[in-house]
Image 1 (tube, rainbow, N blue to C red):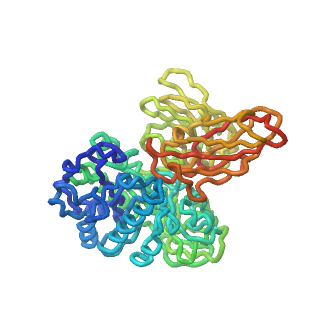
Image 2: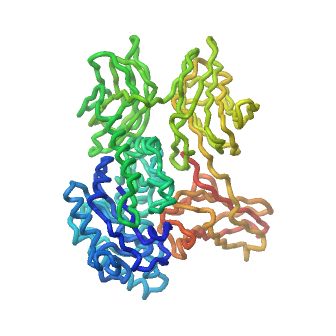
Image 3: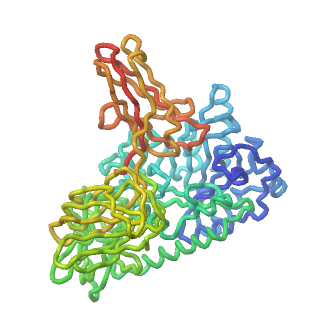
Length: 639
């Protein structure tokens, strides 16, 4: 559980603008016991405390700054939140981690802890090392350390001396990775291994995952409870996520082999709000309801096939697979099958498993279940295989002549999903004896969407249209025409707004069976962020410096492409560099893509109006300067 408290809490902001007098920061009811109770409500095993955010305010007793808990009225300046929290965590058996922002406005340190002058850098290096030493040496075992935005200050010796077993987020010592977004969801497949050169860059994400990588760095999926704010305010409290959304996040973080890092944020009294506590409790209870009582399970098995023989035929709709990942992620591809009516039928399939993979599929009545590993790097070691029947949760299925209910899920690896509920009104239509069918969804209020993702259990759909309309009696309008769907179909289209959506299946080779039907707001299209002309060149060479800040609203991955739009002479980019706040970013945050003259910009640091992301490129025109072009940027599409 993340725990975010900062002077910006009093300001109703996400970043401290230092407008709050220290005398006004007095969380009189602050209760670390309550914080720990909140974590245990949903099964969290650790609290990661933001001991210092970018504004520089320190929540422990330190002489390294004049901006901290020592200077406020709370407990007469004698309070120490780290000390209280460490004691509460120890009492409840929770691990403790610490977030110490290298960015510190009090010292003029920007992203990564970079200062503008050597003198300022030396002073801040000393102060930051003192702060980290205090946090790692005074409060017992620290199990996790976050250097958000990486860290240019040498602190490897301090980690080795005081917390050699702690996992580290970002920076040269990183041992865990960020997924690439703050949605709390991992892309799939999600591999724990990656090339060591990418890990050492300090900013590796899920995008660098590789099952054959030579370094091990699991993924930690961080997300807010308030959509999308890390710090409490009365307005933000109204953005509290739904239980359905938290369960979707759980299935696509812990259920894809990662660690879920869910935020909590006390109010100005120092307490986590009651509404948050109720949601945490409901979240924990729903996880327990779904996955505490398997229909059948087997543990500690080896080999490519693990079979469960049920005591009697039973209905199931979920499977949990766990590898003994201490021996590595050996599974590369697998299928889960159920035995019914004298034959084996596929229930689900996948690639990466790792610590845990949760599969949801259409309900099936089976007498046996088997996991069959169809491709592996070595002999699979199956720590656990368990199957469940979770009532009230459906993946949605359709058989000819049998109208049933489908669900609209709201998740995406790299795109903020629409805020819809899983119990949206849906209708299936399918005349007897035909494969022409349709699914209609009532979105409630008119909703804008520009991406569809369809998962089909059997490869039968050959032609379909996606249609929409505003009111019940309005004419249907076409948003998209498609052909084959297969296991996974995703496509963007010009965004439209409607209340009713219809997936109209026009042709199919057999009765269609859908697993998921997903709608999203869509990926923003390319935006023009720069250009060059023949006059830009001097002696056939040019340098472009592009400030991308307006196009990068939050941390994430962005695609930048350089496109020639005129002139006789071709061009090539000879050098490209990324800068954060005027300082050259670490290697690996700007990487070439397969498309020529295109780059992936990985913005790992916090984003605010005061921070900047600048790409500087050196261009050569081949054979002359008659060359002009345009530079485009967009968020990276989901993979």
